[in-house]
Amino acid sequence: MTALIALLRRDIQVALRVGGGALIGVLFFLIVVVLMPFAVGPDLALLKKLGPAILWLGALLASLLTLDRLFAADHDDGSLDLLTMSRTPLELICLTKAVAHWLVAGLPLIVATPILGLLLNLDGDATLAVALTLLAGTPALTFTGMIGAALAVALRRGGLLLAVLVLPLSIPVLIFGVAASNAAVIEPAGFGAPFSILCALSLAGLVIGPLAAAASLRHGLD
Amino acid sequence: MTLIDLANPTRFLSLTAKLLPWLAAATAILLAVGLYQSAMAPDDYQQGATVKIMFIHVPNAWLSMFVWGVMSLSALGTLVWRHPLADVSAKAAAPIGAAFTFLALVTGSLWGRPMWGTYWEWDARLTSVLILFLMYLGLIALWRAVEDPSRAARAAAVLTLVGAINIPIIKFSVDWWNTLHQPASVLRMGGSTLDKAFLIPLLVMAVAFSLLFITLHLAAMRNEILRRRVRALQMQQASQPRA
Image (cartoon, rainbow over all chains, first blue to last red; front, side, top):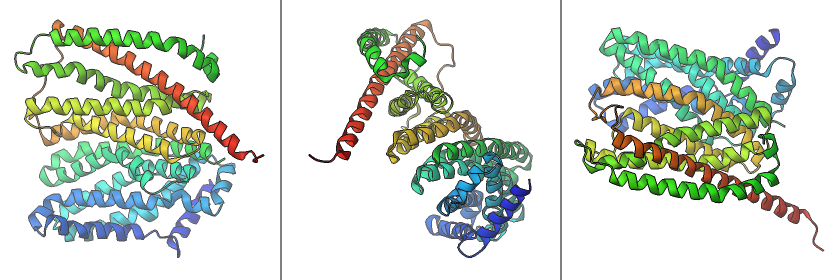
């Protein structure tokens, strides 16, 4: 347990220091959201309608792009080999790394959501709904993405291949995330069902993600 | 005769060499019978002759799912039992599965044009089959991205199994999303109560397509084994110093 806490602290520290690049995901999120009005036009009513979808797409892409480094940096400096050889189960190590990654890369996206909501003309309730659904849904994105990141390290290929493999798997999260956010604005009674499913997806990812990532790391690093 | 006996590629090659002509002949006969019966089937009172697309479309759609199942079993064979032919089977099945999925999409879209008045409708079934197609393409991209087949095999096996868990979730979420966005705007087939005149040709076609898959799959596995042998020989030759 102490080893896992130490790993969590180390991962967070490494990500926050110079060269970690944790906050670059938020910057990317901001830029994607700012690009949208240029593509669809500065119509505030339209942006309000599309707002939750734009925020969710931005968060999805931002969390995907930062995932590339989840195992790659540790693989480059050799610490991943030490981690796989340690006595702690690799599944728990993967879980800890995912949690650390979510804390430094996922949580800032949620914190940034209210400001970006203002840009998209979302009112208070809608912004709150999007932030809540992101809070419930981004862990699922991190856990599915972690599988892709582990595969990418095991194969020494990253970038586009990772995106092509992971994006289809994240469609359910996107569907229920946007549905719950929209339901909160249009008819609050419909918020519960998609939101619960979103939480369920995150919990399922919590189980499957570390298992699959550990399996591909174990088979890939030899 | 167990799966372990097939672990020797040479034995597998000799066995399939005997088996393949029979399989191919059975496929051809069943396909001919199925196509004849489909052509003779009566027109639907609502859809007219276009209902005959169903006899091609539905077997393709079934196989698009079935092939992922075969690949998942092969993935288990790679990861759990380390069966030497499991990754050959998984690799050979992926392009065939993608082809069946693509045909299901194309025939579905051609069927949709006279029925719904559009080639593409964001209907729940079409959408989930499209996502399945994308996942097949991703898997093929993974196979092609890595040179060493055994390394790619294990990664592809993990991805195949994750996909197998995810496909029902995707199917469910797309159904849910579809009913949310466009309730009952799509003309549907007359439920599952198919008349016998349609059911029998459909079943014959389904069996014929399954046989077609098995034939193509075995042939592709043979090709893959031979391709690996050629590659091994080439590597060997390249590593030998010139006389």
